[in-house]
Structure formats: C-alpha cells, structure tokens
Length: 327
Image (tube, rainbow, N blue to C red; front, side, top):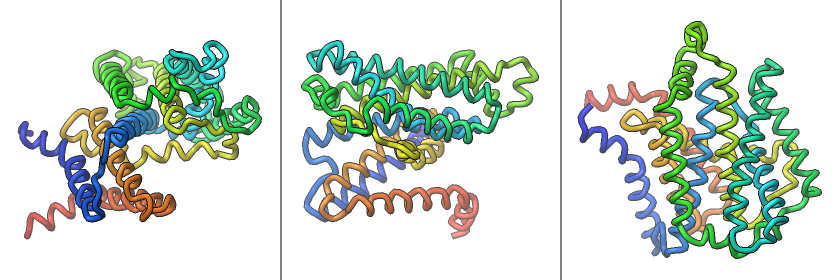
C-alpha cells in the first residue's frame, strides 16, 4: 500500500467529519469550535472517548465482553475523590493526587474482575454483569446513593479541565504506552497470538490466564483515567448508579471502536481509535453548539443511526465497491 493511500485512508473520516459538521454549524451561523473553552472541552472529551474505546477493545477483541467498565470508572473516581479530599481537602495538587489514586484503584478493580473471571470459569459476559452489580453496590454504599460533589468541586479540579494541555498530555502518554505494550512487548505479542488463534497460542506455551488478568488490570487503570476526567468535566460523580446504570459509559465507545478498526487498515489501531475519538468529539461539540435545536434524546438517536449506518457499510463494503467500480 502506497504512503499516499495510507495518509488518505487514515485522515479521510476525521477530515470528512469536520467538513460536514462545520458546514452544518455554518448554516446556523456558528462554528464547530467557537472559542478556547470549546477547544478545551473538545480535547478533554477526545481523551475520554479514546481511552474508553481502547479499554473496551482490549477485552472485546479477545472475545471477552466486559460490562463493568463504567462501574470501574465511577467507583475508582469515587475512591480517588474521597481519599484525595481527605488528604488535601481540595487544595492545590488534589487533582493530580486524585488522578494517581484513581488509576491505582481502577487497576485493582480491573485485577479483581479478572481474577473473578478466571476463578469462576464462566462466560465473561456473565461475570462482568455480576461484577458490575457488585461495584455499583459498593458505590452506593460509599456515597449513600448521593452525588459526590464537594470532593471534586475545587480549583484544582476545575483547573485541570480548564485547559486542553493536561488532557492532551494524557492522550499522548496513554496512546504511547498502549502502542508500546500491545505492539512492542512480549505481553503484546502473546495478546495478539491469543486474539487470532487462542487454541494454537495456548498449545505453543503462551499463558492465557496471566495475559487475561493483565488485560483486565490495564482496562481498569484506563477506566480510572476516564472516571477522573468525567468527574473533573462534570464536577460531580453519581454514586447512585444501580441496576446497570453505569453501563452507559461503555456505549460511548462502540461507534469509535468500529471507526478506529476501519482506520487501522491504513494505520496503527490505537492511533485509529484516537482519530475516531476526534471525530466523535467533533460531533459532541456540534451538539453543544446546536443544543437549542438538538435535544439529548435526538443526540442518542443520531449516534445510534450513525452506528447502524457504519455497520451496514462494513457488512456490505465489498458489494458497494463492486457496484461503484462498475459505474
């Protein structure tokens, strides 16, 4: 594949997304990103979507559907908020401390989820549903079913999302680490082998259980970052998410995961997830600009329709290529 084709294939979706959304916004006398605050929110949301997408794809690509990602994000952020507030009381540096604690808490929650999965030896989708209910119950207990507000509403937290720089640094670090871990380490090589041929990989001596637990731990740490960013962005954490109320976080990653996988034909898969997240963040910025015209329910419908259209395209891509080539 030529370099030009790779560049065009990699950039096509985010560029087309920007052009189409910008035209829509201009028709209403606005721009997709109207000011610096809008750009800050754009980068923060890009980080949230990219990291969630990577976390979802890690286990899903290995046949392990994990419903507990949202619960891990919320519970780890609650733990981080409670501890950091108890130590620093919301003073300078509490955001950085909360981020570190939240990542560690997320990794531990992911590790526990992985250990439960390998111990019970039942389908991962069933295990994840049980883990989700457990983590949601722990959240409810820690917060009495109330929103966590005082712990995350301080100048340190607002300053973290008040500029695009910190979110951009997180994007670069996470992207670099994920590419390094999954593309350039023995752990990553084993993961790819298990992903493409589990039985053969196990027969060659690859330790499936250790790799699976490692994947769950990494996913937990990533969702810890997501939980922190959501807490800082929303200035609250909902502690009353019972009966699978936390699952909604996971669904934000489905469309970008498919888009990123498509882009990976021309580039690195993780970089594809970043560009897919950029596209989704542009769409989210457009919704914010047109908030008076597009309601929350309409936004959900639009996202669902876009996912359906993209899946239809992927399933009929060869047929469409044949039809277009004949013309």
